[in-house]
Structure formats: C-alpha cells, structure tokens
Length: 145
Image 1 (cartoon, rainbow, N blue to C red):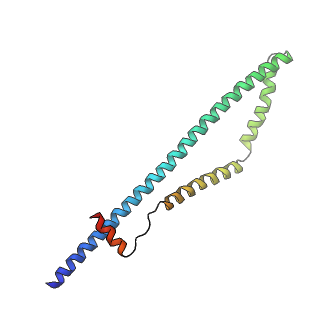
Image 2: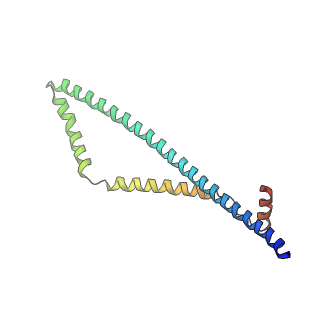
Image 3: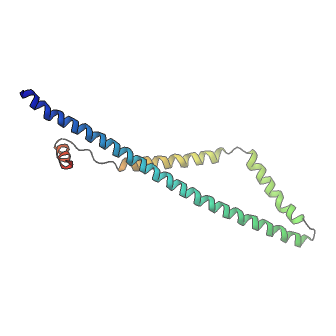
C-alpha cells in the first residue's frame, strides 16, 4: 500500500511534466508560424511596393520615349522617322534581354532570398526563452498551477 502512495504523486508529477512539455512545444510551433507569417507578409509588402514603383517608372519612360519621338519628328521634318529612331535602341536592348542568360540576376535574387531567410531564422532564435534548470523548473511549474 505504501508503494501506491509514493508512485501516485510521482505519476501525477510525470503527467504534469509531459503536459507542460506538450504545451511548450505547441506554443513554440505557434510562435514560429507567426514569425514566418510576419516575415512573409513583410516580403510581400516590399514586393508590391517595388512592383508598383517599377510600373510607374516604366510608364514614365514610355511617355518620355513618345515625347522624344514626336520631338525628333518635328526636328527632322519626316513623319514617323522619330519613332523609328527611338524604337531601334529599344529593340536592340529588348533582344539582348531575351537572348542573354540572366545568371547574374538569378544569383543576386537567390542571395537576397537566402539572406532574408537566414535573418528570419536568426530572429526566431534570438526570441527563444532562457532554459530553466534545477529548482527553477519546479518553481516555474508551481507558479503555473
């Protein structure tokens, strides 16, 4: 009978510890998911902002090229020649972009992505709670009850 009384508090204590560990693991997983979501949403926001900026710059260049073509038409006095002169460098540049391999751009984007992932992982690592040892574990468990 005496052994039942001593094992019963031990069994209770083990069940308590396992439930605490389970709760701790669940909270850590939730924290990691939240931080990854935060990093992902920040990356999306930056991408949208840069894309909108790129579109505005592209529209600006289109207006600039049309204005330059109209001005060259006026200077040369031959209708359409200004548009031909403006379009030739654009066709050459477009052809270079199509047929050249984008290795440098790919490497830069890959490095940027890797750095962002490493930063997000390091931020998750810095936010880890300190490890409790010995009597601190018992006092923290007693406080939760």
